[in-house]
Length: 173
Image (cartoon, rainbow, N blue to C red; front, side):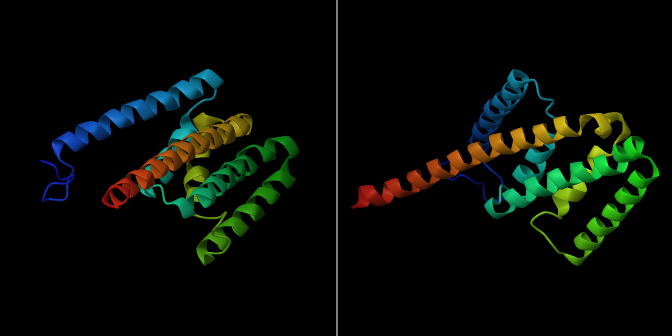
């Protein structure tokens, strides 16, 4: 079968095998890079799932996804890491910040920084076992490394697709 997709809209078995091989190479590179740099991959993986799979690598959503993720980690730290450091004033600051964040999210304001990515990372980073109070910087590093890796691979793949789509047109000339 030369068609990339079967009549049911699903990839052919051969296309699926090729995609799976690409995913294995991609993930080996991802985990290898994280291991080499000594960074925990959790937030990087979360970014890959969110921007890569859920948003289908939508280029316009890349920066908002990164900024939103960082904002979610920061908000998590404000809620769980700040109060033990400064006491009750930290609780007040974090609750006011959360109210402002939720207000902006519900109104659809500042979508470049307050978006679904913010809420996703806020939710995950507040999991008690992740200890955001101690690990916020590592979580942000993980997110940024995952975003850089995914962004670079996605940009490279887009460049290859663009050049391959031009080749038949150039041959026809």
